[in-house]
Image (cartoon, rainbow over the protein chains, first blue to last red):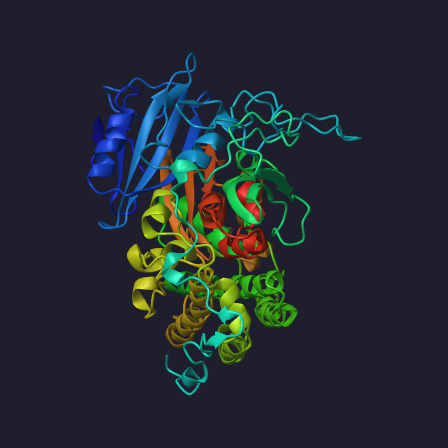
Length: 163
Length: 449
């Protein structure tokens, strides 16, 4: 587990809202890290989403973390301390799976289903890992960067557009 | 409240549960509501979404229960929400909300739009509180850009967001009234909402999907005479909330249909990440405007309304009183509205003023560049959350240094709050299901995005 405070790392250029801390967890200790954070007062999992870094591999991560294609981002919220913390875990393309947080935060159920639906991240031991937004028989995971956005043929528009 | 001439109109419990020839006409106490089982224990029906043919259903159940489908085309499910309900007689056992019928891939679209265009996209998510969507996207972009807004822009944003909260809650009052059979409430709610929408039209040019709050400030200054318009809205809506009290709050039928219906405990609500009126109805005083102030909410006075029992009636009272609190905030904004710029004078983000375009070629090019290529946002990632009328509305934004977001994720409060529905419905009557759905206040545009 690597802590990255927003201010003292030069690569994180953005000024952060106060208390917006980031924890980089490896895939193996992801569940344990979140479990520890929950025990230390982060009662609510505000948000969980995935990011596909296929076309932006050079983002900043701490030295001891190997960047992978996918990242699962968990935003935890402490109602008692009025603080947020963000857990980022690297998920490799070859085996896009991480442990589910359902046993810690039942509220992550729909969010993990969405991440599975949109990015194809498999959350092991999730009680009902099915597509949530796309139809059940849909092929592919739309928010992956190598998933085409499609194109509607338009008359008199030969020039290739940005899409 | 400043105006206490209204307060005494509504007695706490205006009828007595006296003995009648059919026994005591009292329902179960509110504290002993229906939700008894935790989410993980089994209020969620785990079935394939296509399976309604009873031959294919492969779950343990006895012959006493039946599974029915409700929606997605149903007048009372607030859009295209579909529910699969397991019933035992008229009692709901397990529920599965099925969403996605309004999915249009807006997060994918956001990756194709520049930051300038982005707010036109997000405003269409939660179409009942479009300004909050624009606000959270703009705040996230500004956090990455590192720009500081002029005071007037901040206060205009706050004014518009509070008016939007009023209009959203009024819309909820209207649809909730309709779900409970009060068509008068529906007409009244829409009538009052119209006042607010007219002001929005005057200020932003459109009634919904405003694209008014943009990265760098707001699109235009408030129109001349806005103080009078806002004053009229405040006075009218504030007085009429007390008419709603007479129409609904003290009405025995309304109370019997909402008290002790759809209960949830604080622990369950927190575990299920529920925010907004659902969380506050359980007695947790969590409001991001108070807990983690953004804009200038630390400079205005307001109360965070909480409930006790976590039932439909508490959620109704919270929304009704939040209208009053929003009006209280708006009245303070009216007094404190500072003068100055309504958008940041940072030429990287803001196009040059219109008059400069006529006299300067560079200004014209600059204007053209901002609206075609957009502005570049430094690399980084940020999560920003605001309190929308439905709860915590978050935006996780990743920038790779170009003019388009690398990833934009919206944490829609309705999407997360829908997970409480199986808990709220469990053990209740099927006839109350519509009322319970309504009390969650899901906006399907935001659920499906």
